[in-house]
Length: 257
Length: 257
DNA sequence: AAGTGGTCTAGACCACTCT
DNA sequence: GAGTGGTCTAGACCACTTC
Image (cartoon, rainbow over all chains, first blue to last red; front, side, top):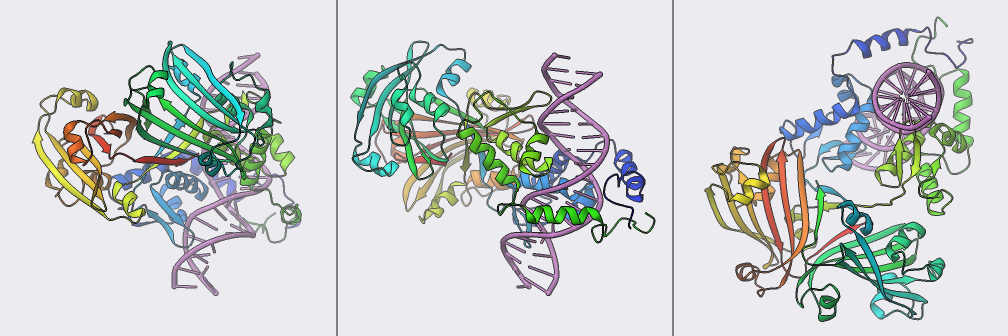
């Protein structure tokens, strides 16, 4: 016990001689966390384990599949965040009984979205004013009616055609630097993404009819169906910005599940 | 060395006496992977590390923050999947230069979405027929025009009011059991979620105008703006189902960022 | 009180990729 | 070829939850 200090404990002890062979002598397909992930998913899909079922605990699975508990843990953790499993200490791991399809939605900077399709991006600042916010913005961002804010409307174009119309309120108090930004060159959205950190946000999607003004700006007709994205972001308790993004008719937002 | 076989090596050896104190004697705030995550995020947000910057390698960070490399790895891995970092072997870890806002979108079973708001859910099968698919479905699901398919339309209601109108095609070849399902009791969507595994899927959102028929079913007026969700799912190379979900006016899909 | 997942560690090896 | 992230392992302890 004395001389076995701390380092090099893997050199000549029994643990090593059993561990190394086990790993290498294993079946052709190695047991990595992804194979555990897939195997568990297979058992769920084939209904060997049904929604609500309790599945074996980590130690047992590790034994069954011939790997370390940490590996199983990694696989099951991913499956839980993907929504396939519910895990609770002591209670164990169950197959999720209310399957939720969890999609990752990438919300790109609009310029990149357009350029990514090989189209030419252009941006125009329509209007910019420093003023106090209307009541609904006060509510949205929890700011006082006499706050110093920036009100901006702008248009984003793809291949010269109107693509998205943006109306945005930015709290100057929360983001002083924006007062100096040249928002005719870089869109407020992009500026904010690069310079204004936020800790939480909220996004919603809906369908609305184009107003007369909106129709004119987006070069469509009144009452055209528009895809509306509303975003609000916060940094701690400070409301940063609230935006209303109206996409031209025909816009589709995609995602893989 | 002899008697110290393998178990209980923590009982009386030097390693323990140095390790245990280190962890517990550390600053009040312990260094777990989440604190590393937050610290790195803070450095990004405060622009100490700017978009495109190379950040210290895992070993260095581990040293700086006083934890194991695995812990740093865990934190950085999460940050990468959250879209804040770009990691490449040998090249190192960089702050993402094209920040992508990645939202997790939970797409619940519609019944649960309605019940979760405390409303009463009801469902009605409008139409069900076994027939060959129209061309656009053949394209969508990559099935032949003479495939055996199920065509279903149904209506989902919240508190008795039309909530969502669903039109769906299901490949009977890929999902034979659905021919036996009683789709007047359980919605096709819910049945499929419970019984038909899929490996990949696709979802898209857009805004459309209500047709005369759709308006009548959803009890609204023609040309009302409707939120449209289109979903296609696959199991390997087999197209399973393709659905068109039309939500009643006023529907909003929410998500946190 | 006991059982289960959650996490940390130190060490090792692997795999990718950049030069 | 060499450097960096990616992962695995065995062991340990912690935290939460149910009993």
